[in-house]
Length: 338
Figure 1 (cartoon, rainbow, N blue to C red):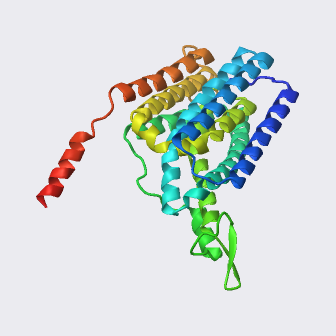
Figure 2: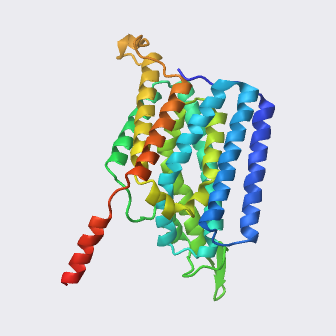
Figure 3: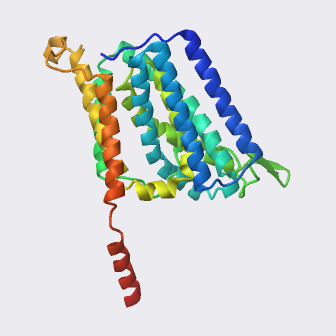
């Protein structure tokens, strides 16, 4: 079964402190200079965070060796790629709540911080479950295979529906009709009310948690080390805000990304099931004994497969983009006939 790695405690603590400081500085900078970043500015920040993740991988390699470093890279690359799919729903949420452009950076940042806290809890619960019940890998594997099939089927949300938490807040608390800058509460006619900004932040954070129900099992299919899982999630979410402002260009240029992600999730799903078979304890499968023919897929092969699937999707998107002209010509003809 997948093992954990004894990275030095000082390294784990120092890493989390530095990452927390970067997130706080990022939040302060966004708060003091609200603006709509250009595509070029967003691309520079994305490059910075990608470089930061690669530097961290080198540090893990130096301190812990190639195994944890490879698992971090595979986990981070998987989580970061899956975050592109999250951005589509984030855009729907921002549009649904009509968030002012100047406040979108701050809103995303706070929503991402909430998502990190929620994911941390989910990772701790997942790690505890895996440690006690190894058969949960079967469940994780099936979840990923189902998600992969849904991705291939193109089951994307075309509109945003408010979740239970947002609806409850609307019922129990008065909501102001308009935004008041970046404030979460405001006073109208002497009455204290929450602003739509609070609802947006709650929607972003809780929606990301729903996405994590797919992505967390995926990374647990690559490593069982909670620190590596959490650090990979932090680095994946750190550049998410900048990726949001590159959304239009990314979605147009990476049209086949969902197929690459589906292949990655399917591969990890199969890997999880093979891992579960290899260390099987379920009584009705091979008498509760491990299945000898179930192979263990090494980390380097997982990393190679993930990079390969994503690279194929990216190259195919650039070389053979889907044809949209025919659809546009048909629409123009229909408009002309009216």
